[in-house]
Length: 566
Image 1: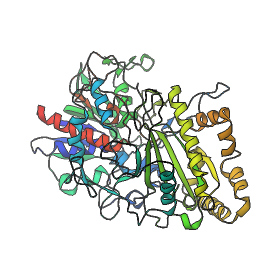
Image 2: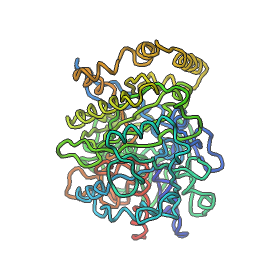
Image 3: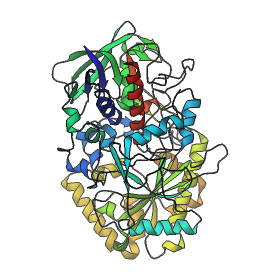
Image 4: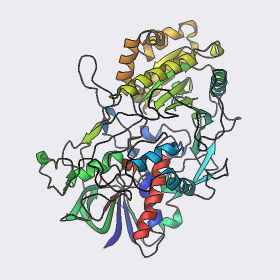
């Protein structure tokens, strides 16, 4: 019998597999639904430090996963589900994400501790942030120097002219340039911290934690292209899981283990718990035997709500190195809304808004709420692992979120229409990551021709460029109308709001007497034995940051907590 069965080889699962097998007496099997990748055979669309193509390739994601983001419209019709890209590949989100490596505020983790997640204060987690990284730009008490994940920032020489112009414009508006996004927590303009190696390549956990020498350990097995169907129990003790080849054909296997760890992410970990009889209701409609009722499973679903404002970039302002990362600088700022913390807003300065020719011609201010208050949930659509769960983020259901995102959009519009930008770029227009944008960005000759024509039209439209953007890109939406009309702005934000691929919170940590808590501070699932969760679903509240680095940090710490019990 195995010591540990890890279900899910994403950002957290690869870390756990590497750390737990450091003890040669411990046997580990890592199961991943997607394909295997390593440092040697990483596909070019994943390896590149310019992200975008990786999650457009359906081989790398859960292609049928959909989610509702916003609220019902003014007519009462519910928001239409949209594709929600989550990694289905060894390395998970770290293999398809934007490579951004920020941590969040110290107060985020103190808040976790206050919510009953014992041992997760800032003082407790900082050593693990340092443990996971080698920071090539800073060496102080905030940063690590010998961890698996290399972190770098773009140099001034490589920064696009557009982003340099934006930073200068923000400086004149009173926003100060700061040195370190992952240092002392404060508002300001920062160069983005990016996880990349010395060649500028992506560093998913499947390559920097599961190095060749780690994969060669006799106590580690890696099983890819296999789907976790359900966890098996002996009464209330987890004894392993049923897995089968992804794709629906092949032999089902029952794998037994002393401990089973779910690292399937904030969407699929709670879905697997539900299919296995651990849920708020027991799902009587699907005749799933009840193992334990836990009210928090699938609840507390969080995301960072987002919106965007874009502008046409003439050739002198464009990013010329097409392999360079697009997110050159960020503005962290505070809304000032009563009851909100410092740094509750995030604005990314995007030098190239898509991997393709049209994206090269568009610069974007991509804005999200660092500290949202809205909560969603997910539930099972069926008892089958082949059917994706029903995901409803319920974004902007809290009025504070709607109001702040509207104000952030107005700030973005104000920046891109600042007199300092006159004659350099323009016009400014509202944008969103819509199904239409996704379709046009996809592979295929027809899309390629469309993009080429649109790119040429943008370059040569001259005085009719505003009309063309209005007619072809925004389909009638004009930024001047949204700025002047609060009702129109509200409807636009509610209809177009998206996430940032930061799903979290659905198996939240907390005290045993908290009815919404699913696990304790070590990821152990309440009311059963032999079962843990370790991924972004554990987060009681979402940090003021991209969630990948915090997820790796959590896996590092939980690995140590497990070792203490071995």
